[in-house]
Image (cartoon, rainbow over all chains, first blue to last red; front, top):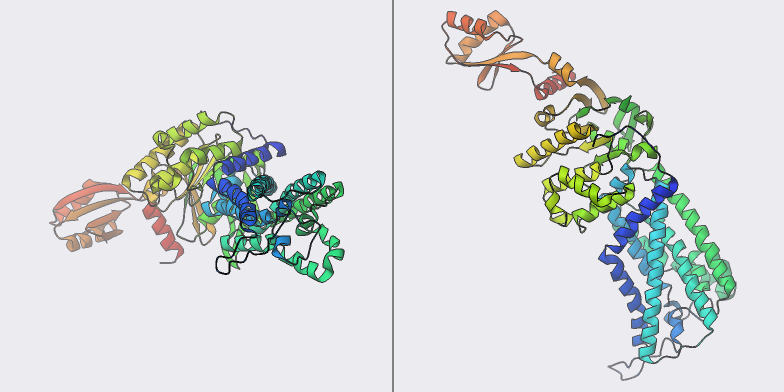
Length: 277
Length: 300
């Protein structure tokens, strides 16, 4: 096979398709993805399964975190500042573990040197950012689904009540899944910044995933004024609560998409202006 | 048209210049041996061509197009430092990912083709981390060969390999260039190995290209010499120096430079009572030429 000296520029769509194909192939062929899906299912199961258990030393039952199993998915109302761990521990935790998963996923690109193969060929930095964001958003959305399954199964096994407006619950779940895009773009961005420091990228993803900076502001503003925090990823994720309305979904969509664009543009700029490794 | 054309390429790391206005021309179809000592800027140049590093200034053109053009980049394959594979994935999976990335239509067929070229047809299901160094280098070449590359960039592909590994790699490289006709840019410290395959050379020192020449030009510049052994080496050295001028003692041989007439040398020694026990005609190879050039540059 003698090569011909013809050079045809692949379209943006073809380049992105190729990159997405690689990322999804890798995602589905790595045990890490399935481990994180299992972790996402185990979190609500552990929370619901252990809440209200009897302390073996004192023999006194601990105060249950929830009476309603759906609270493992979201709080009743948007609580930017929370008063107990039960108001914090819900589906938003998927985004913390999702951050670690994204860090491992992207970190391995750099650790293995595979990123060299990608950038030697036609892939542009923009394709890389977009592909990682979409793939990791998909993975996190899947984690939301397994989290939901874990919560429902554990809730049923423990015999908790499932009360609430079905429509609002569906919107809350969909809104949180939509937020995966924004979170994935943040983590992709962080991992591009700290691409040479695997540990730092995991730590930074974990830190931002916990929402601590937004929680701190929420503590100052209080929950009534906290709605301004909906412009941030953690704020919108909190806003997707059990009293969600179609507006909630719209807010989450806009917030998630806007941050995805911002982080993608910023990440592309960094990758284009700096050495790859 | 040249496969690679670099003008005034400069790259610094924290104020230290790795490349200083480097110029380089690699003709289409050439096997370009890129030579230089450690830290001279070979790998930096290759990484810049591959788009892994961002240049401070300068221009890189591949086949007459800007090096960032996806149309030309899709026809570039590289093995820089290591194969860049996922250790826990199989050889097949690693190749498959690159084939998907390149958007190749007949992926299975293409993967089998490159595995055959690198003589690894039976190792497709092995995990990459279980492969030996030689196998990893060959997988790296297989990755680079996916999708009919017009330009292959290979950074030290034979370093660290055992004799057998080196032989296999040499055969593969000759195969690639002869059967598939790609342009190859190859850097190596093993000049003897490089000399067997290269058609062109570029010699880099302290980030600057100090010489570019073809194998034919090197042949023309290579000095001939006769090496010989006698019983009384010091006595013979004096006699030959008086007659031919440029004579040196190199290890256990006497070298008479710029003379290829062995009969005249033997005659001269016989007349002076020296018996020649061994005599060979030689030509300075790439390695010696390079050492000599470097010595000149260092003013030795």
